Image (tube, rainbow, N blue to C red; front, side, top):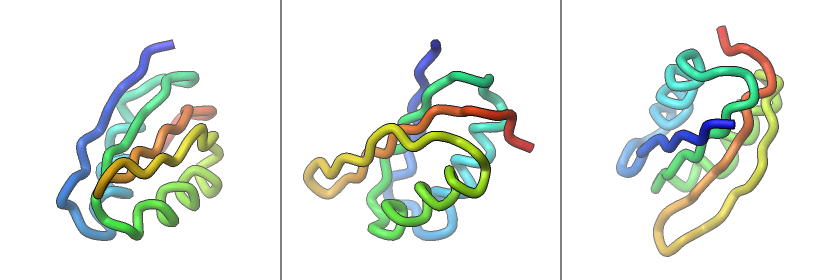
Length: 78
């Protein structure tokens, strides 16, 4: 399955979620996406977005001042 990366560094809420939603619309079922964010709210907002939209949260890792959130698209995003 293809893996994609979204750079959401220096973006504040709600932009990491909006950028993720827009990117997900371009990806296919089963693709994985890692979002790299610096906004602390992303660690709560993106897992909630996954749950609401039926996607699977794979990992949430803190690296220095960044949050790396990996998810798998389980259903088509609208």
